[in-house]
Length: 370
Image 1: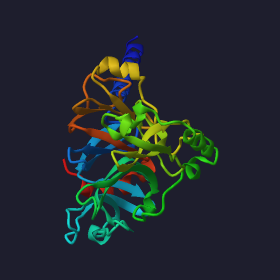
Image 2: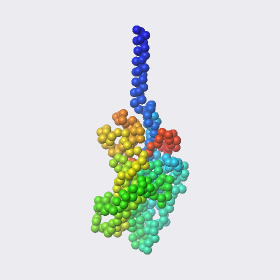
Image 3: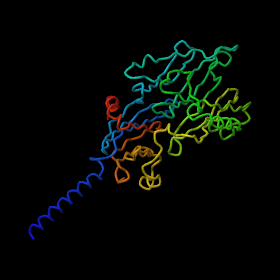
Image 4: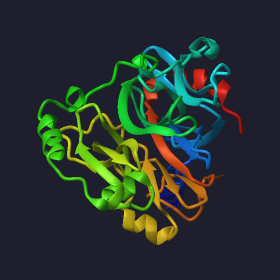
Protein backbone atom coordinates (compact mmCIF):
# COMPACT_ATOMS: atom_id res chain seq x y z
CA UNK A 1 0.00 0.00 0.00
CA UNK A 2 2.85 2.37 0.86
CA UNK A 3 4.45 1.59 -2.50
CA UNK A 4 1.24 2.47 -4.37
CA UNK A 5 0.88 5.69 -2.36
CA UNK A 6 4.49 6.62 -3.17
CA UNK A 7 3.96 6.04 -6.92
CA UNK A 8 0.75 8.11 -6.91
CA UNK A 9 2.57 10.94 -5.11
CA UNK A 10 5.31 10.99 -7.76
CA UNK A 11 2.73 11.05 -10.57
CA UNK A 12 0.83 13.90 -8.86
CA UNK A 13 4.01 15.97 -8.39
CA UNK A 14 4.96 15.50 -12.06
CA UNK A 15 1.50 16.60 -13.14
CA UNK A 16 1.69 19.75 -10.97
CA UNK A 17 5.16 20.61 -12.32
CA UNK A 18 4.01 20.08 -15.91
CA UNK A 19 0.97 22.29 -15.36
CA UNK A 20 3.13 25.02 -13.79
CA UNK A 21 5.48 24.96 -16.79
CA UNK A 22 2.48 25.28 -19.08
CA UNK A 23 1.26 28.33 -17.16
CA UNK A 24 4.68 29.91 -17.49
CA UNK A 25 4.50 29.38 -21.26
CA UNK A 26 1.09 31.05 -21.51
CA UNK A 27 2.10 34.09 -19.48
CA UNK A 28 3.79 34.90 -22.72
CA UNK A 29 7.12 36.57 -22.21
CA UNK A 30 9.82 33.94 -21.84
CA UNK A 31 9.28 30.69 -23.70
CA UNK A 32 7.84 29.78 -27.07
CA UNK A 33 6.21 32.55 -29.08
CA UNK A 34 6.49 34.88 -32.02
CA UNK A 35 9.87 36.09 -33.28
CA UNK A 36 9.71 39.26 -35.38
CA UNK A 37 10.90 42.85 -35.68
CA UNK A 38 8.55 45.85 -35.89
CA UNK A 39 9.50 49.19 -37.45
CA UNK A 40 7.04 52.05 -36.92
CA UNK A 41 7.64 55.18 -39.03
CA UNK A 42 6.10 58.50 -37.95
CA UNK A 43 5.82 61.95 -39.55
CA UNK A 44 5.29 65.19 -37.61
CA UNK A 45 3.95 68.18 -39.55
CA UNK A 46 4.89 71.71 -38.47
CA UNK A 47 3.24 75.09 -38.94
CA UNK A 48 5.77 76.20 -41.58
CA UNK A 49 4.68 73.23 -43.77
CA UNK A 50 7.89 71.29 -43.10
CA UNK A 51 7.93 67.79 -41.63
CA UNK A 52 10.24 65.78 -39.42
CA UNK A 53 10.40 62.00 -39.08
CA UNK A 54 11.27 59.36 -36.53
CA UNK A 55 11.18 55.60 -36.31
CA UNK A 56 10.64 53.12 -33.47
CA UNK A 57 12.25 49.66 -33.41
CA UNK A 58 10.82 46.72 -31.47
CA UNK A 59 12.08 43.14 -31.40
CA UNK A 60 10.12 40.12 -30.21
CA UNK A 61 12.08 36.90 -29.70
CA UNK A 62 10.20 33.77 -28.63
CA UNK A 63 7.37 35.93 -27.31
CA UNK A 64 9.60 38.31 -25.34
CA UNK A 65 9.13 41.91 -26.53
CA UNK A 66 11.93 44.50 -26.31
CA UNK A 67 12.00 48.18 -27.25
CA UNK A 68 15.32 48.85 -29.00
CA UNK A 69 14.86 52.61 -29.21
CA UNK A 70 14.10 55.56 -31.49
CA UNK A 71 15.84 56.98 -34.56
CA UNK A 72 15.43 60.57 -35.78
CA UNK A 73 15.40 59.27 -39.37
CA UNK A 74 13.47 56.73 -41.41
CA UNK A 75 15.51 53.56 -41.94
CA UNK A 76 14.34 50.88 -44.37
CA UNK A 77 15.85 47.39 -44.83
CA UNK A 78 16.00 46.62 -48.58
CA UNK A 79 17.74 44.29 -51.01
CA UNK A 80 20.16 47.13 -51.79
CA UNK A 81 21.04 47.51 -48.11
CA UNK A 82 19.89 49.74 -45.28
CA UNK A 83 18.36 52.91 -46.76
CA UNK A 84 18.02 56.13 -44.79
CA UNK A 85 15.45 58.71 -45.91
CA UNK A 86 16.99 62.13 -45.31
CA UNK A 87 15.14 65.49 -45.31
CA UNK A 88 17.20 67.91 -47.42
CA UNK A 89 16.94 71.64 -48.05
CA UNK A 90 18.17 73.85 -50.86
CA UNK A 91 18.45 77.62 -50.63
CA UNK A 92 19.77 79.59 -53.59
CA UNK A 93 21.65 82.68 -52.35
CA UNK A 94 21.88 84.08 -55.90
CA UNK A 95 18.14 84.56 -56.27
CA UNK A 96 16.47 87.91 -55.59
CA UNK A 97 14.13 86.29 -53.06
CA UNK A 98 14.61 83.54 -50.47
CA UNK A 99 13.94 80.28 -52.28
CA UNK A 100 13.49 77.32 -49.92
CA UNK A 101 13.14 73.87 -51.44
CA UNK A 102 12.52 71.03 -48.98
CA UNK A 103 12.95 67.59 -50.52
CA UNK A 104 13.98 64.06 -49.55
CA UNK A 105 16.92 61.85 -50.50
CA UNK A 106 17.42 58.09 -50.09
CA UNK A 107 20.92 57.28 -48.83
CA UNK A 108 22.26 53.72 -48.87
CA UNK A 109 24.23 53.58 -45.63
CA UNK A 110 27.05 54.16 -44.88
CA UNK A 111 27.21 56.65 -47.78
CA UNK A 112 27.54 60.35 -46.97
CA UNK A 113 24.20 62.13 -47.46
CA UNK A 114 25.93 65.28 -48.71
CA UNK A 115 26.46 63.67 -52.12
CA UNK A 116 22.69 63.87 -52.64
CA UNK A 117 22.53 67.66 -52.33
CA UNK A 118 20.76 69.07 -55.40
CA UNK A 119 20.56 72.46 -57.03
CA UNK A 120 17.34 73.99 -58.33
CA UNK A 121 17.44 76.63 -61.03
CA UNK A 122 14.82 78.64 -62.89
CA UNK A 123 11.73 76.66 -63.69
CA UNK A 124 10.86 78.14 -67.06
CA UNK A 125 11.67 81.18 -69.15
CA UNK A 126 8.61 83.17 -70.20
CA UNK A 127 8.14 86.42 -72.08
CA UNK A 128 7.27 88.20 -68.84
CA UNK A 129 10.33 86.94 -67.04
CA UNK A 130 11.64 83.87 -65.23
CA UNK A 131 9.49 81.58 -63.10
CA UNK A 132 11.27 80.19 -60.07
CA UNK A 133 10.18 77.50 -57.68
CA UNK A 134 10.58 79.52 -54.50
CA UNK A 135 9.05 77.09 -52.01
CA UNK A 136 8.47 73.36 -51.86
CA UNK A 137 7.41 70.95 -49.15
CA UNK A 138 7.77 67.19 -49.56
CA UNK A 139 6.02 64.72 -47.26
CA UNK A 140 5.97 60.94 -47.11
CA UNK A 141 2.44 59.52 -46.91
CA UNK A 142 3.49 55.86 -46.92
CA UNK A 143 6.75 53.93 -46.92
CA UNK A 144 7.60 50.25 -47.18
CA UNK A 145 10.60 48.20 -48.27
CA UNK A 146 9.92 48.77 -51.96
CA UNK A 147 7.90 51.97 -52.44
CA UNK A 148 7.49 55.50 -51.12
CA UNK A 149 4.41 57.70 -51.58
CA UNK A 150 5.33 61.38 -51.76
CA UNK A 151 3.07 64.42 -51.43
CA UNK A 152 4.51 67.55 -53.03
CA UNK A 153 3.40 71.16 -52.62
CA UNK A 154 5.24 73.82 -54.65
CA UNK A 155 4.91 77.56 -55.10
CA UNK A 156 6.29 79.25 -58.22
CA UNK A 157 7.03 82.97 -58.32
CA UNK A 158 7.38 85.15 -61.39
CA UNK A 159 10.25 87.60 -61.51
CA UNK A 160 9.10 90.66 -63.40
CA UNK A 161 5.51 91.79 -63.74
CA UNK A 162 4.40 89.94 -60.61
CA UNK A 163 7.57 90.28 -58.61
CA UNK A 164 7.24 88.85 -55.14
CA UNK A 165 3.87 87.17 -55.73
CA UNK A 166 2.72 83.68 -56.60
CA UNK A 167 2.41 82.73 -60.23
CA UNK A 168 1.27 79.17 -59.65
CA UNK A 169 0.70 76.68 -56.84
CA UNK A 170 1.05 72.96 -57.54
CA UNK A 171 0.06 70.05 -55.31
CA UNK A 172 0.54 66.47 -56.38
CA UNK A 173 1.19 62.96 -55.11
CA UNK A 174 3.16 60.15 -56.72
CA UNK A 175 4.89 56.85 -56.00
CA UNK A 176 8.57 56.01 -56.38
CA UNK A 177 10.53 52.79 -56.06
CA UNK A 178 13.06 53.09 -53.27
CA UNK A 179 15.90 51.99 -55.54
CA UNK A 180 15.01 54.88 -57.91
CA UNK A 181 14.06 57.36 -55.18
CA UNK A 182 16.62 60.02 -56.12
CA UNK A 183 15.67 60.03 -59.81
CA UNK A 184 13.09 62.79 -60.26
CA UNK A 185 11.77 61.37 -63.51
CA UNK A 186 10.94 57.78 -62.56
CA UNK A 187 7.42 57.66 -61.13
CA UNK A 188 5.46 54.44 -60.79
CA UNK A 189 2.00 54.24 -62.37
CA UNK A 190 -0.86 52.54 -60.52
CA UNK A 191 -1.25 50.04 -63.39
CA UNK A 192 2.40 48.99 -63.03
CA UNK A 193 1.67 47.81 -59.49
CA UNK A 194 -1.94 46.60 -59.69
CA UNK A 195 -2.42 45.81 -63.39
CA UNK A 196 -4.04 47.51 -66.37
CA UNK A 197 -7.55 47.07 -64.91
CA UNK A 198 -6.79 50.14 -62.77
CA UNK A 199 -6.74 52.29 -65.93
CA UNK A 200 -10.55 51.98 -66.00
CA UNK A 201 -10.70 53.46 -62.49
CA UNK A 202 -8.46 56.33 -63.59
CA UNK A 203 -10.65 57.03 -66.63
CA UNK A 204 -13.80 56.92 -64.51
CA UNK A 205 -12.45 59.48 -62.04
CA UNK A 206 -11.21 61.68 -64.90
CA UNK A 207 -14.80 61.97 -66.16
CA UNK A 208 -16.08 63.24 -62.82
CA UNK A 209 -16.82 66.87 -62.08
CA UNK A 210 -14.90 68.69 -59.37
CA UNK A 211 -17.26 69.74 -56.58
CA UNK A 212 -17.07 72.88 -54.44
CA UNK A 213 -16.44 70.72 -51.35
CA UNK A 214 -13.46 69.09 -53.06
CA UNK A 215 -12.00 72.46 -54.01
CA UNK A 216 -12.36 73.57 -50.39
CA UNK A 217 -10.69 70.37 -49.15
CA UNK A 218 -7.88 70.61 -51.70
CA UNK A 219 -7.14 74.29 -51.09
CA UNK A 220 -7.67 74.08 -47.32
CA UNK A 221 -9.53 77.40 -47.44
CA UNK A 222 -12.89 78.97 -48.28
CA UNK A 223 -14.01 78.51 -51.87
CA UNK A 224 -15.06 81.67 -53.71
CA UNK A 225 -16.72 80.43 -56.89
CA UNK A 226 -16.78 83.93 -58.41
CA UNK A 227 -12.99 83.88 -58.64
CA UNK A 228 -12.64 80.52 -60.41
CA UNK A 229 -12.04 81.46 -64.05
CA UNK A 230 -11.58 77.88 -65.21
CA UNK A 231 -11.27 74.35 -63.86
CA UNK A 232 -10.25 71.12 -65.58
CA UNK A 233 -10.03 67.52 -64.35
CA UNK A 234 -6.48 66.29 -65.12
CA UNK A 235 -6.49 62.94 -63.25
CA UNK A 236 -3.82 60.52 -64.54
CA UNK A 237 -2.33 57.12 -63.65
CA UNK A 238 0.85 58.57 -62.11
CA UNK A 239 -0.92 60.49 -59.35
CA UNK A 240 -1.93 57.88 -56.80
CA UNK A 241 -0.78 56.52 -53.47
CA UNK A 242 -1.33 54.59 -50.27
CA UNK A 243 -2.16 56.21 -46.94
CA UNK A 244 -3.72 55.45 -43.59
CA UNK A 245 -7.52 55.54 -43.84
CA UNK A 246 -10.10 53.93 -41.56
CA UNK A 247 -7.32 52.14 -39.63
CA UNK A 248 -5.88 50.33 -42.67
CA UNK A 249 -3.44 51.11 -45.45
CA UNK A 250 -5.73 52.14 -48.29
CA UNK A 251 -4.97 52.79 -51.96
CA UNK A 252 -6.23 55.97 -53.61
CA UNK A 253 -6.15 57.69 -56.98
CA UNK A 254 -5.62 61.45 -56.85
CA UNK A 255 -8.69 63.17 -58.26
CA UNK A 256 -6.67 66.02 -59.69
CA UNK A 257 -7.62 69.30 -61.28
CA UNK A 258 -6.17 72.51 -62.63
CA UNK A 259 -7.82 75.82 -61.81
CA UNK A 260 -7.28 79.52 -62.38
CA UNK A 261 -8.09 81.09 -59.01
CA UNK A 262 -7.52 84.76 -58.08
CA UNK A 263 -5.33 84.96 -61.21
CA UNK A 264 -3.12 82.20 -59.81
CA UNK A 265 -2.74 78.88 -61.60
CA UNK A 266 -3.38 76.03 -59.17
CA UNK A 267 -3.00 72.27 -59.48
CA UNK A 268 -4.68 70.37 -56.69
CA UNK A 269 -6.15 67.00 -55.74
CA UNK A 270 -8.20 65.03 -53.22
CA UNK A 271 -7.72 61.28 -52.54
CA UNK A 272 -10.31 59.01 -54.12
CA UNK A 273 -10.04 55.60 -52.42
CA UNK A 274 -10.38 52.53 -54.65
CA UNK A 275 -10.41 48.75 -54.36
CA UNK A 276 -7.31 47.03 -55.77
CA UNK A 277 -7.06 43.46 -57.09
CA UNK A 278 -4.21 42.48 -54.77
CA UNK A 279 -3.19 44.40 -51.66
CA UNK A 280 -0.17 42.21 -50.82
CA UNK A 281 2.05 45.25 -51.35
CA UNK A 282 0.92 46.26 -47.84
CA UNK A 283 2.72 44.21 -45.19
CA UNK A 284 -0.21 43.53 -42.86
CA UNK A 285 -3.67 45.05 -42.47
CA UNK A 286 -5.07 42.52 -39.97
CA UNK A 287 -5.50 43.17 -36.24
CA UNK A 288 -4.85 40.64 -33.48
CA UNK A 289 -8.13 41.69 -31.83
CA UNK A 290 -11.40 43.07 -33.18
CA UNK A 291 -11.44 46.87 -33.20
CA UNK A 292 -14.52 46.91 -30.93
CA UNK A 293 -12.59 44.94 -28.31
CA UNK A 294 -9.63 47.34 -28.52
CA UNK A 295 -11.97 50.34 -28.11
CA UNK A 296 -13.67 48.73 -25.11
CA UNK A 297 -10.26 48.34 -23.43
CA UNK A 298 -8.87 51.72 -24.60
CA UNK A 299 -11.75 54.16 -25.33
CA UNK A 300 -9.35 56.88 -26.56
CA UNK A 301 -7.80 54.57 -29.22
CA UNK A 302 -7.74 56.03 -32.75
CA UNK A 303 -5.76 53.43 -34.71
CA UNK A 304 -3.92 50.14 -34.24
CA UNK A 305 -1.52 47.77 -35.99
CA UNK A 306 -0.60 44.15 -35.28
CA UNK A 307 2.29 41.88 -36.18
CA UNK A 308 1.49 39.17 -38.77
CA UNK A 309 1.36 36.42 -36.12
CA UNK A 310 -0.67 38.67 -33.76
CA UNK A 311 1.90 38.68 -30.93
CA UNK A 312 2.38 42.48 -30.96
CA UNK A 313 -0.35 45.11 -30.86
CA UNK A 314 0.44 48.84 -31.11
CA UNK A 315 -2.47 51.18 -30.28
CA UNK A 316 -2.39 54.86 -31.27
CA UNK A 317 -4.07 57.32 -28.91
CA UNK A 318 -4.15 61.15 -29.20
CA UNK A 319 -0.88 61.67 -27.33
CA UNK A 320 0.59 58.20 -26.72
CA UNK A 321 1.41 54.89 -28.38
CA UNK A 322 0.65 51.78 -26.30
CA UNK A 323 2.48 48.59 -27.28
CA UNK A 324 1.21 45.23 -25.99
CA UNK A 325 2.78 41.80 -25.95
CA UNK A 326 0.40 38.86 -26.58
CA UNK A 327 -2.75 41.06 -26.43
CA UNK A 328 -5.16 38.16 -26.86
CA UNK A 329 -4.14 36.99 -23.36
CA UNK A 330 -4.06 40.32 -21.55
CA UNK A 331 -4.42 44.05 -22.20
CA UNK A 332 -4.38 45.14 -18.57
CA UNK A 333 -1.14 47.09 -18.98
CA UNK A 334 0.93 47.98 -22.07
CA UNK A 335 4.46 46.65 -22.22
CA UNK A 336 5.62 50.05 -23.47
CA UNK A 337 4.12 53.54 -23.57
CA UNK A 338 5.64 56.11 -25.93
CA UNK A 339 4.67 59.77 -26.13
CA UNK A 340 3.44 61.01 -29.51
CA UNK A 341 4.00 64.50 -30.86
CA UNK A 342 1.23 66.86 -31.86
CA UNK A 343 0.31 66.36 -35.56
CA UNK A 344 2.22 63.06 -35.69
CA UNK A 345 1.03 60.52 -38.27
CA UNK A 346 1.73 56.84 -38.92
CA UNK A 347 3.43 56.40 -42.31
CA UNK A 348 5.16 53.01 -42.01
CA UNK A 349 4.54 49.66 -40.30
CA UNK A 350 7.10 47.14 -41.47
CA UNK A 351 7.75 43.66 -40.11
CA UNK A 352 11.06 41.80 -40.15
CA UNK A 353 10.68 38.01 -40.38
CA UNK A 354 12.35 35.58 -38.02
CA UNK A 355 14.77 34.50 -40.79
CA UNK A 356 15.96 38.10 -41.33
CA UNK A 357 15.80 39.36 -37.77
CA UNK A 358 19.36 38.71 -36.62
CA UNK A 359 20.85 40.36 -39.74
CA UNK A 360 18.71 43.48 -39.62
CA UNK A 361 18.77 43.88 -35.85
CA UNK A 362 22.56 44.04 -36.06
CA UNK A 363 22.41 46.71 -38.79
CA UNK A 364 19.52 48.76 -37.37
CA UNK A 365 20.31 48.84 -33.66
CA UNK A 366 23.32 51.24 -33.83
CA UNK A 367 20.98 53.96 -35.18
CA UNK A 368 18.42 53.67 -32.38
CA UNK A 369 18.65 55.20 -28.92
CA UNK A 370 16.35 54.93 -25.92
